[in-house]
Amino acid sequence: MQSDTVVIIPTYNEKENIGNMIQTVLSIAEHQFDILVIDDNSPDGTGAIVDGLVAEHPHRVHIIKRTGKLGLGTAYITGFKWALEHGYGYVIEMDADFSHPTDKLHELQAACATGGADVAVGSRYKTGVNVVNWPMGRVLMSYYASAYVRLVTGMDVRDTTAGFVCYRRQVLEAIDLDNVEFKGYAFQIEMKFTAHRMGFKIVEVPIVFVNRVLGTSKMSSGIFGEALFGVVKLRLEAWFSPKKFQRRQ
Image (cartoon, rainbow, N blue to C red; front, side):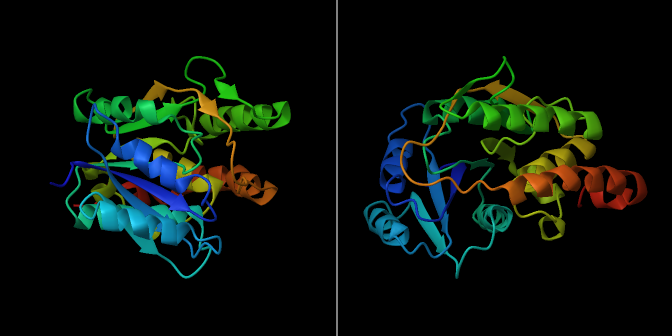
């Protein structure tokens, strides 16, 4: 039986993590979650590992294989469209590397399902700085990047760049997904800002973010640069192109 909630996990070279991640999500007792992996043709065999789990759990684990590294944002857009086509009521973004706590999935989903939220953000900064095993420079860059985004956009969200997020399907239906511009770090900001401008309610669920133990981080300085200048572009569009932030009917 299909769940009402799907967890979308983009992957590129995550063979050390993806099998354990899928099994962990499947074993959550509080709520049944289905899983959709978007794999960007990982050369390390990530896709084959997922294929095996799809065969074991054909109604709960799914995979979309793409031709190459096409960007985090486009992976999620592909996943969002698939989730809407398959009738899911709640859609969660999550990393494959266990930096997002799986024991918070139920709380994140419940914030939207029963707590009145349209968007629930797994927040590293809601109750201070809750990040483990990151270099101090990266912690400061991330924290002040979120503060910068709040200043420019006016959003009352402490962790604007978070990638652990639950959306009600009504939010994704209202946004013109084909018109989402950014592919990297700024994608997360653009989605939250668009939901905010459309009047959807965003809440933050405190989490502890733990830096990956296995595999290699995909973060780069170029991703931060996209966010830095992308936020200004979003703010200007809100002023001069307000139709972009009108809900689709």
